[in-house]
Image (cartoon, rainbow, N blue to C red; front, side, top):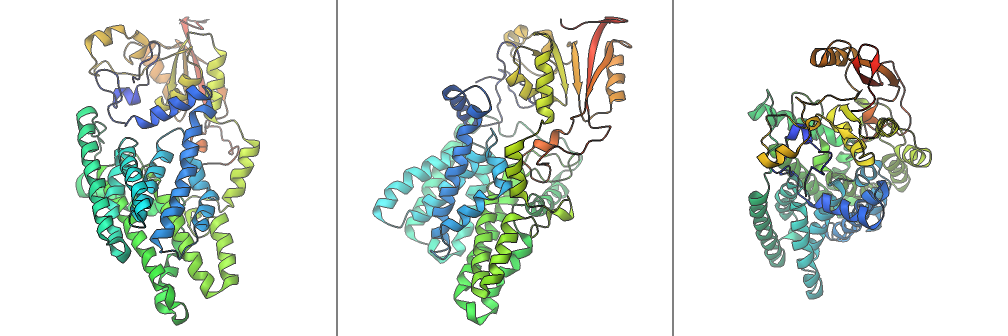
Length: 493
């Protein structure tokens, strides 16, 4: 499994995630294997790449229901968290991505479900152990952060008496043994610490900043209806619903587990602090379903207080972002599920689609430089006939014989692109850089595409537009073309 296919190289930020063999030595391999399987079995386009991730997201909802039933000792109907999850755009946007998100959520809840059922009966024990072992290994080979965070959060559930059985102790011991074996194997074959943040902020200020960002991210990314959390206290304060006190306590246990999950993620996340403003919540996607579970518990408590009030709050909580308060930082208030369904029906051309469409129109074999670098990977997949340049620095340590095979356009220092497509950077700045590097007026601006909102198709819900975003003069894709001499344009090398 390599980043180099003989023509193009996925550089991962100038080779930051690649070893000397041009193999990604940071990311575990499972997401690539799953994507490759879908592409091989179905087609080599979007459907094939995404299908198994969507299925994993669906199976995660099933595992969630099984675990919720045991965690709340049958007090929460199995269908309720599943229904809320299926109506959560925050969840749906992530699990349809051709990345590790859905796999991580599935393995997390498969592990929790297996743990919760391992002492139910002898038959369930025979099922739970293979599932738990496979889920533990699956987590490690999906993403290290997902594995470490889930394994660290599991002991928090010992706050609940029904987790303190001998069978559950033994099961957890087996899980940690499997985790140790997988971890040792990964340290021998991968380098999970290869992507190290180069920040001005380090130590305690870094961790404190990231912790606050992740906690606020639960609301901003609509993982959790934070405004409803005080409802968990009602059973201990109202005599007529005192019988639900354990339900409220189980909800708080879940909150503490979420906090532990975040604390471990903050310790090991590769996120840069100085150049970012919010948490990279893609590393904690399983917390969406924890939030869904808490929402279900809260609605059950409200149902016992007042059925009409519970119905009204359920509709508001499930269909809008009112109780997450996300709109206070990033408007608008919205009925997200309706916007999600409308987008699925109508769709709109994203900036990625505009880039791919343009790259497909230029002569085959053109050398293309796309700014920022991560916007090159989709065109690289859909239009592999082009040569995508500036993927590696010369200083990157690459095996000598392999480096000799790489064409000049792969290296940032040697490349001379025929076309430059730029977003998120002022056009004048790009032109100045091109003039300084290749000679004054060697590049001319030939087109501007008014579709530079790259963030609008991201899975993070507060960045997602759910339709064509409003345009401004700066939100464009600027296209430059090389000229061999003044007034003579060169289409391809």
